[in-house]
Length: 267
Image 1 (cartoon, helix red, strand yellow):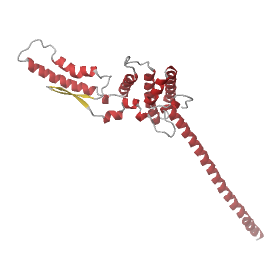
Image 2 (spheres, helix red, strand yellow):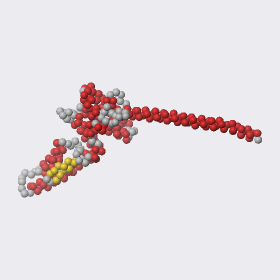
Image 3 (cartoon, helix red, strand yellow):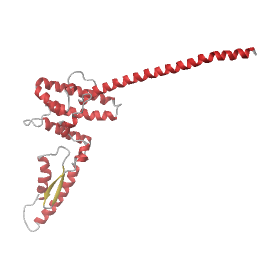
Image 4 (cartoon, helix red, strand yellow):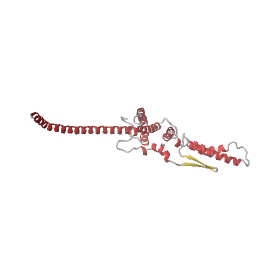
């Protein structure tokens, strides 16, 4: 009996201590949770700052400011898949025997005089090939040959349409446009010009950045991105030493800011 009473008294004396211990544990857990949340917030803020510095170096977008790329001249010139599918304009080449539908964007660098030669001059020359005498059947034979050539030209136009090109074909067309845009009239194909090289590198950097946003574990292309960013900065710094006016003129055309070229580039 005495043992039972003693045990109950001991339990009653331990209950306040147990309650205090449990209460203290809850407070400690709450404090630990607050410390963990604060550390997580600090890590996220550091990550945002690092991402902003990376964006500044890669895309030339200062933190808290709008991207200059959509309004720059290079973005208006280059071709993307969205632009290709949005543009449906076709040029009609009229002949008495029919029409040739020429797409607005052609692959393999077909433009200008080459485009005119392929779709305006060549069908007529091919249809009249071998005609040395004129008789009552010559006109009918020439018309039939011209209809066949128009059919061939329409099939060829579909074949060289830039919509049917792969990524390499689109990249080739964009490089050709960069060279034509940033070269001088005296030398229209000056691939060694610093402005041309910086424009082509900027286009490559943006395409690679879009790829890395989808495939974040692509370590090899991350290294390639760093190399291209530093190579572009090196070219633009050389242009700044050579001609500061050209340097200040090219930056807005590429949608870049001076901080994405000068100083320490954190990528």
